[in-house]
Structures are given as structure tokens and as C-alpha cells.
Image 1: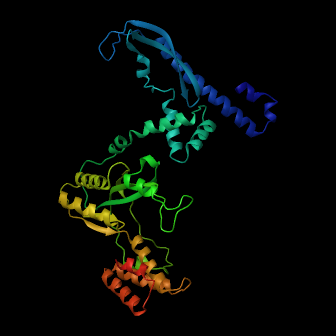
Image 2: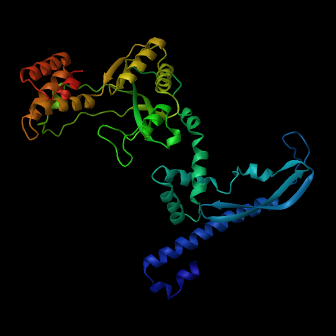
Image 3: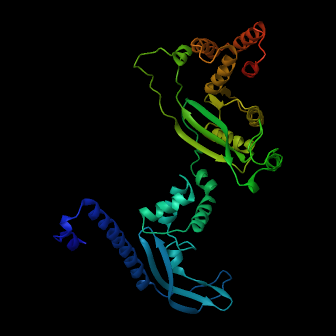
Length: 382
């Protein structure tokens, strides 16, 4: 490679051509290094006494048993000793020593493929592997590899749990939410499958119908954070031109996980159990942040009662604002500039703790105006 780059004709090439040459030949150099390492391991492999899973001695030795390994740098070939016996599967000790998988793809390829697969489609992942490495993984094998890796999902996230009590008086925050995930039809829950089959039209959805192709995953998070004291006015002020912003300390020891298989109640209980391991005496102030979904709230209160937990349940204010805007569209025209001042005043009152008074005022306004379209107001009041 050095001799090639020193050639006078090559010196006349553009940097892109030289870069492409180094990329191609450099990958081949790395492949040769890996191949050389495997050749050394093969030459130094000693003969061993090997038994099967049933403690049967495998006395038949076969040298130079060949297998290919698809690495990040390209395909390398490995020769190792194989031990066998009649009616017994062959055993290759070197495979276990090097921690090789049953298929021909290296750990580096499997990790790169998993990283690319979560970003988009399998086609994009396969294309990325082809263009950025010396390996090639067909689409069907790519799907199988990602499925094999996904089986360790729970174990991987369980290792990130914080099981020791935290010596702090800061807020201990739990938050839960549901996330719809598009599924294959045979993976939908029974009720969703029935709803999908009862669609009125074949070519498109009728008014008010849903596609019924999602399954809800429950997402939970637990973390510790310092309180951030803010006034209702500072939250809702739209005319604050000051460049001074309060310093918000990032959350600590944050763990986020989700499950589409386990029920929402199970994931919620897991979150509270982890919080108990962090604060077994409940000496911190516990805060549960939710979006106000009735079923989710019911499960949260049920778990709190079961585990004898005292926590403050807080509804995400962004969701509250969305309902307030729905109510405002029942009272104002679409282009009315006064709507933002109306929202700011009522949102500030809600943040002051006067949610009941705001709800009562909305109902009175709708009644006085004899509104026919007041669905948004009724939802906001609820």
C-alpha cells in the first residue's frame, strides 16, 4: 500500500480516488490481521480430552475442521480440531474458547447490524453493512440475528437497575406512559384483532374508525432529581424577554424500560418496586408523573395501595394545556388574537391550584352562550 501511494502516477489522482483505495485495501489489511490471529490459534491448539453432554468420551479426532467467519473486515477462514463419536454431535473446543456463535457472523457484525436495524428498515441496515464494512448479511439472516439479540432485552435492562438505597433527600420521580406499536396481525391482542376484522369498508376507513393495527407498550421510568421551584407566572409568561433562565440539574440514576408483552399493571408495579429499593423507608418525597389516562391512573392507585406507598400524583401540564386549547376553540374564532391571553390566564389559575374554579367557569360560559358544539369544553371540564 505504501509503495502504491508513492507511485508517481498515483500522486496525480484526486484525494477521493486515494481515499477509496485506502478504504478498500485497508479493510483487506485488517482482514488479513484477523486471519493471521486465527491461524496462530489453530497452530497452537493442543489436543484435549473432550466429553459430550452425556459424559461420553469423544475419542475420534479430526484436524483442520473448517468454518468461515463473516467479520467486519470480510470473510476469514478458521481451521480447528473436532471431536466426535458415534451417535454424538461433534464438539469444537476452539469455538467455545473464541466465543463464536452458531452462525457464521462475528460479534462485531451482529452489534453493527443491531445498531443499524433500530434506526430504520432491514433493507437500510443491510445496505449500511455492505457500504461501511467488509461484511455482507442477507436480509433474512439479518432479521434472524436481530431477533436473537432481542431475546436478551429483559436481562440487559435488569442489569441497569439501581438496587442500593440512595442517600438523598431529593425528589424520587416515577413516570409511566403508553406507546402504540404497529404489529403484525397475528401479534395483536384478541380484542384488537376482532376490531380490525369488523371494519365497514375494505378500501379505506369509515369516519371515526381506527386502523386497529397497534398494540400498546407500557413505558416506565424512575429517577432522582432536585426540585425546580417555579411560579405559575414564570411558566406561562409569553412576554419574558429576559435571557436569565433557571439552572435545571439533570436527573440522576435514570432508568427507562418498556414492555409490549407484560401488562401495564405489571410494568407499573415493577417501577414502584424499584423505587422502594432506592428508598425503602420512603424518606424522600415521591412524585408520580402521568398523562391522566383513566386506566393507567387506576392501576397506579391500586399498586400504591397494595405496596402501602404514599406519593403525589401529578398530571403532565402539557396534556392539561391541550384540553384547555380544545375548550378555547369552542369559544373563539380560529384567528382571534385574544385566545392566547385567555389561555394564559386560565392556565395560570390552574397552576395556582384553582382547577375546579376554572372548570366551573368554563361550564357557566358555555351555558350562557348556549353553545351547541361544546364537546371540547366538556372534555376539559372532566
